[in-house]
Length: 152
Image (cartoon, rainbow, N blue to C red):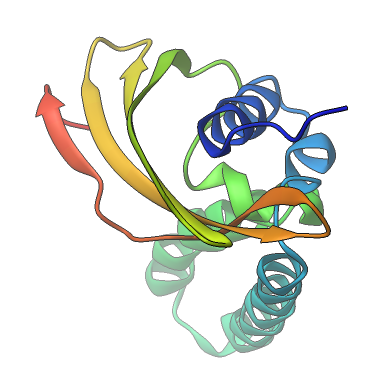
């Protein structure tokens, strides 16, 4: 079976994440990206535990102010395999994802794409991929999301 093009891997991963199938989307992450996500989940869990441990020492108003933040952090890491995607896409929030440009050089690729969100806004972004064992895998995002229409 021929290897998928990098832009097809990006579409497949984001489609799975958009459907809430994060463990399927994670199959398209390179091992280092999965390791980084696991490490981030552990760090967030430790931070949440520390914040929860300090809640009793806070005044009721301060405690009430911290609780929404703690809940958001807990939601972000539940389930842990969704962490790499939840910050980018809530389930069913993407209407359409289109590859704009694909640049391949040896075993590395960059895919620029446009995301049309259900709320009507549009963003452009890039992701880097690496070819490992004859498969293209998402390496990392370049954190270049640029709003095109609307604000998210």
